[in-house]
Length: 254
Length: 167
Image (cartoon, rainbow over all chains, first blue to last red; front, side):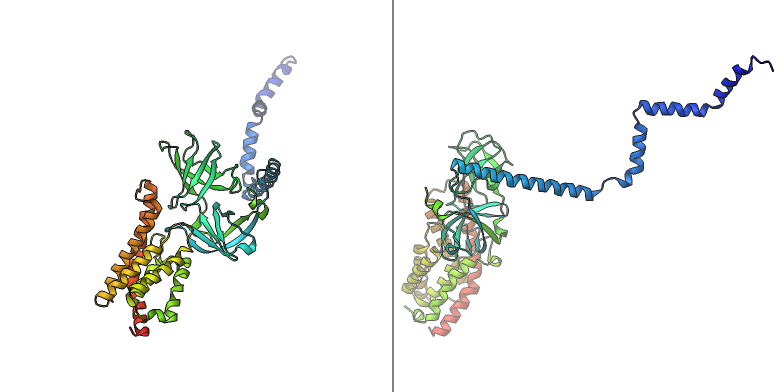
């Protein structure tokens, strides 16, 4: 075998023989150029049984809920402080839980009778709330009972506002299960589904209590547009309510 | 005037009317509206005790049930008139004991009572459609349920009072 041919043939044969290694290198280069796409996919496929489950999601949700509660408490406190600075709400109402001992949500008059009265500090005009929001206001009290006019009663008038468009209105009972909202402006720019809360400028009820949802809007009503409100508190099913007792000093104030 | 008003327990039985009005048992409601308990008590009382006693009982009952409501409307005139009418009816003709006539009298009485409340509330013009709808609903439901209960309750009360009072 001549000497000059060996060194030329040997590397070529070597290269030809090791073609699988070449393929591997090419594959590695491809992986590198694709920024590890195949690796990530393979890892995702393999680790799928060990992905974070529902338990972790619940922890996160409870954490978020706690954070929201803390923020809400903080904002409420802040709001109260600012309102006191503005002298809008003279005293913070105490919440008093009372049992519903008589209920007449339909009929000629819409009213409740509560099992707590003057002896517990309830006075005429106090707001009554239940699960879901405002129910009505105390009309009269005896030493041990209080009579509540529901929002649906014809004598009920409460100042409310639509938070989304920031429009004021007067919630008037009709005797039906859904009271009517009479707007103060010509063009309230509201639509069905808007939330209704008690007016921030109201002196009769604490501000910001949820009342209900707009169900139908009548733009063509004269003298002002009206809307039908579906109340959010189910009066027919509530056995215990909370009376927001205002202190006697602030009640006497105009 | 009959002798029923001399029986103290019979007069005291009127005290059940405000209690039942307050309790408003839900199984006796039609479309969420309770019967008029005042009518259900006043009808047998007037039939048994005559026009004057009926009218006075109507005034007394009216005072009682008015005190339980938040609204400014009153039921006194309607109840007094009904008591007087039913008392005259019993005085003039044969004793009314048939269940159907008791039901019819209760129906007419409740209709009259409801119309008087509607009239006080809206006046003669029932212009607002939503208000009218609510009023008519209550009127019809209360009339129906009172007329349905009257044959049962009124005939029982009438029987009891006639037997006890020996009228």
